[in-house]
Amino acid sequence: MSGGSPIDLAYTALNRVLAAIVILLLSPVFTYVAFRVWREDGAPLTFGHYRVGRRGELFRCLKFRTMVRNSAEVLDVVLRDSEAAREEWARDQKLRDDPRVTPIGRILRKTSLDELPQLFNVLRGDMHFVGPRPVTVEELSRYGASKRHYLSVRPGLTGLWQVSGRNNTTYGERVEYDSQYVESRNPIFDSWIVLRTVKVLLTRDGAH
Image (cartoon, rainbow, N blue to C red; front, side, top):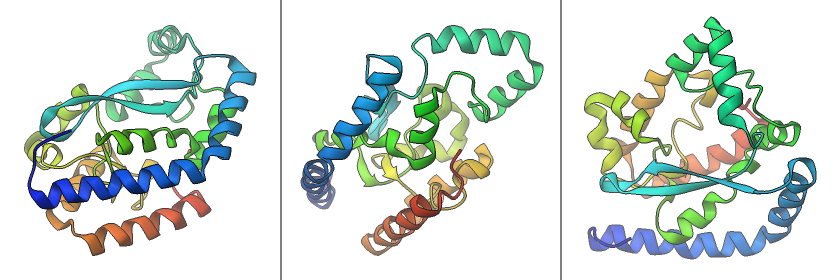
């Protein structure tokens, strides 16, 4: 990605270098997780969904695949047959007890290991280590006036929402956390979020 102030370009370059180092260090973990996904449900091993990046540019946000291969059909059936599921999906764009998620997928989600491939998004310059959570085009429409905050920065692997309750928060609170982050972002704040992320990952706070 190009464009931006010299400070932003330097910060993105630093993120890319750090991503390359972390990918190298975690290569055994990547290999093990990929093998587990393949053994349980075959290929593909990863899933790429288009998300909105800085200035509205779309990019494929990568994750290890945690759902069955016919997840779209399964979701259609669940939403057709369950009013409670329809209401939950309309409110949160996710289901707490999602029948599409595979057994290994549940483990990956609880440990956040499913998001490891997003390190390649950081390496490409699509994302930073810290920033608002990546959202779809449809989700961005729910940000209202806060949309300008989201579009002004690159999405992050982690962020204020992830260390402030994560899935225990409402959608409106997530949007508010993203706006708060953009208004307060600085290297010290980012470092605090990274340290808090380590704690959240170890305690699995808000993960399900």
